[in-house]
Image (cartoon, rainbow, N blue to C red; front, side, top):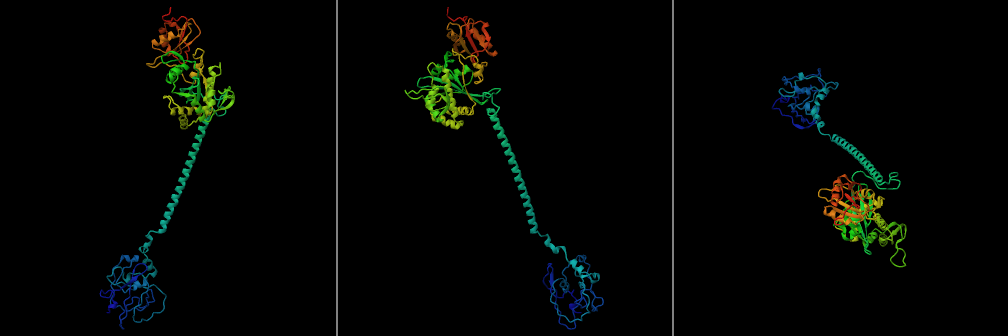
Length: 566
């Protein structure tokens, strides 16, 4: 038999791979037929190249040797095609047609309907092929269906750029939505915060106007008579002494800043008020300023009124003139004409409302006292000038400090420039909105505090009160002489020797019996000891109204016996 008719022969030339089809499977080259006339190529399809199916009526060439069936391949049903040592016709049927081999002409079969070619029997022992007897005569379409496998479409598992773009787009839209929502949330928060700030600002402004009495119906019929507050009140008090360098006179006032009620007050102190000097002897305020200086006078006033004074401001007339000029003049209502020192000149200050005064005119008006005029008139003019200055003074502490520094005045160590400027700035704030007033301390002809002074001025404005002396503190005692014997000096000496602080003495109407007055029950024992020290009977101790804020006041009568007198 011819070797070409036995493709399973291992010595038979193997087909050569000439390429790969579109599914990645190899395509073999058809071997050329040998040039032997009598021999013909074995055609499993019965020599009918145009027939694709099995023709039972076609004449079959006799098979010289039976073909051994190949072992059963379980994977053949799934269409897996393994490379085999066949003639390559099976690959040629699935791939592009290769050049037909040269072979002897065969007799054409009668025309028949096109049918799928019968599968080629694989040689025995070649894996992946089933024998022809076990193969089904199904159409070629089924074979083709089995030929398409999942692994041939491996590109489906490859990452798709379009799908990644879709994911990126979804992420972008999601993040953009989140950013929009976050922006809207921040916008809402800003709006809420703005509304809260506006509400607080409006509430604070209304509260301030209400506390200042600027709202309709919030002030009393007479205007702003001062804010009232219950409980302890905080006050900042300084004493100012105006020194007239021309005639040597002095004028004293207290500048009080009530931080609790937000009220400013100028308390005018007459020079005739009796205070105690450094030795405890009675003296007038004007004489104390000249003799005891700023610190001694400040302590004497504090003891008399029962208030704490933080510092002393000595204001000479040249500095007052510079101060008025630094605020560009003041405007006040004057009550009299002030003549000029030059003969024949017009009055330096004219009487009238809203008079504008420069520095020189302000000094002249603050120190002017007509012949035979009461001291209180001159003090009230001084108070008007101070009020006019505060209305023009800066309420900014830093700017106020600059103004004080430009005066170049010599201040008391108890009140440096920064502290003085801060106090004046607070008072200026009250004066600008009208929460400021001027009060005169009522004093009798004898220099003692008049009745009611402790209620209207000392208690309400200054916050002075009588308290029990602390441990080691010396009780303060004042004396009013009604004995008609000029016994005040003798009583002072007796009290100082007894360990008491003598606050001051004044004259009183003549009376027969002496009195030792105390206002607080805590001072009752002190009053009894004072009576013993002066040799007065125990029945003279009574509860009453001491002078000012003094713990005990002694009113001497004719029954008082002056030591050493007959």
